[in-house]
Length: 468
Image 1 (tube, rainbow, N blue to C red):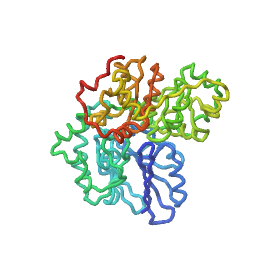
Image 2: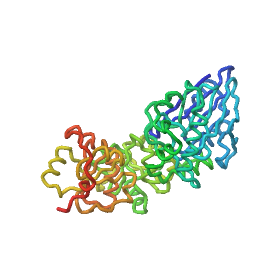
Image 3: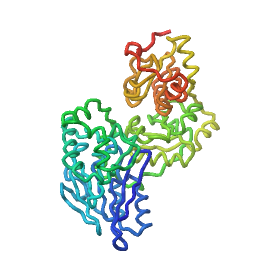
Image 4: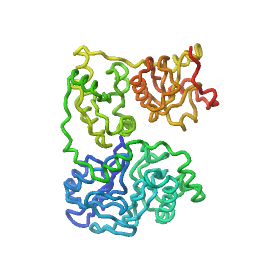
């Protein structure tokens, strides 16, 4: 048997190819493909395989799948859970259905809970592809069905795990669709595979003593579901257009960028945060191409906003366009040709984002406690584990809609863990009209390295300081 895992770090997404090697030109199956499908075509050609099967464990909410284009390019059949309601030619599979690929036997299990149509695929009783049902160290979030409550889905997920997946032998290899950093779970491991036995022993969700405890555990503090998730589901239900159908990325002059911006387009700056800080176009939103770029773009921008890209160079502009398309963002008017250097040559105005180091921030807070507003844009759990005394919590994924309590006329110092999210947040605050936004260099990691870890303070002490 041939087996390969393809891991897309910017989306924490794992896809797979398996093939029978019992004869030359063996059949191959691709499981949960990413949108840009060239990697599968190249790998199949390299080994002389014929891709004949494409299996989706569910309708993905956090990225756009390439199943439709891959099927059109190879003639392969697409397999989906019978309850998916897919709008393209496919094979609807139910519990116990089997697929033979050469000398390999694939058995489908209906494992609803993350979504109603979720399936898992057992291969020769030795390995199981669990999609978003079972992760390494976690399980899927149970809030992606519009007509079922999270509690109802969590109950289904409990049964899927304990009645089906946990009945597999302990040495069965587990291969999920996501790893650490994905928005589809909360405590995923950085490991990319495991076994049923190891998960039974170590996965926090599987250690719940009862179904009721499991449901409460999964639903009591669900993180906010990103708005673009429901749109990605519908794109995947219909089948996304081929990437080759997207119009070429237009190179725009500074005048054209200004014109687009005045017409309502958002300038998206994907350069590293420090390059953005030194000089950027007023009103632009910064999301660095490093890190979980595509997910943050989906959260902050949504799928319907027209964008103009500012990148380090032409190659990074093209990479930005691809990564946006992976989550369904396709309204890209073009990119600033020549980047910020060209903007400067044309004599256009730029603005900068001041940074402050931890020593300077501590001194300001000690000398004049009422001067700065301090804004923590991390997750609530991070904030509760420790934060700068007096900081106000506003997670970056909710910031645009929760600016109440912040004074646009007073300076605000922004921090996250290390600086990636605070750069996004700072650009959002600038765009919202805040006059003096300052980013903390190195974030909370730098703060505790100098000042030591600070225990949480009472909520009354975390309120916004009085005006100077």
